Length: 320
Image (tube, rainbow, N blue to C red; front, side, top):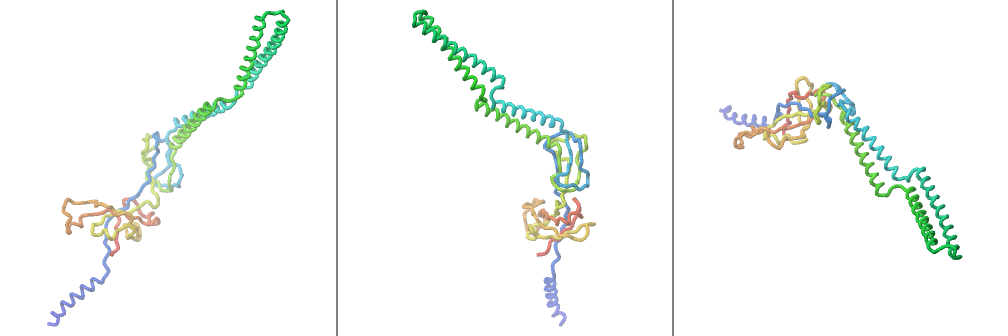
């Protein structure tokens, strides 16, 4: 009788003791995934050199590969010649005519001035003769006309000489400067295209894979080398809908894998906003476990060397 009476009490005690014991953390299977840096060239060409070797560690700025660039090299030379020609034309418009041309214009002006002096002397003598009655008025008029023509000729040559000493008009100089700027811009484009044919590593990383061999044609934008940075590994696993509250970003989980040593920690950074697998059933309380959400957690950089992409891992989420 006493034992029968004590049995309910023992059952309650066992329930309370089990409630006081710490709950085991939930465990989920997942895998390691890498975020590769796939390096490509924006231009197409045949692969002529491949410096990157699979598995090697390279520094940022180290050469990776080179595509054929004969056409781009010729384009740079052509653009450079266009710039030099445009510069020369622009400088020429800022100066007057050459020294010999100015000397010839000055000599023509001197001859015209001498002719004017002679015309003025003839006009003075003709006026004196006309006053004395030795020449007619028609002859005096002809002498006056010749003197006026010589004076106009002198003014014309003086204006031409002043213009010869000046440069081109301002509008012409502005147009020449614009041509020079356009030529320089074309040169920069040619140099950029040439630089894109020799590709260097953007980061310090390990060469995970090379996707082409020397001699093969590479289309524009196609990756040639795949790089893996030391901290570019993450854990991917799936949790059911009731566990979402326990795996919010910032939560630290524990993980372990075969052959990678002691368990390590990783920090949750992303939880998918939509279920990865949604069965075509009513969302009842019984089938919530069938809604799985992707979770991504990043291990510390010092843990990355012992992990490999695709490696299966077991992730434990701490109990609330």
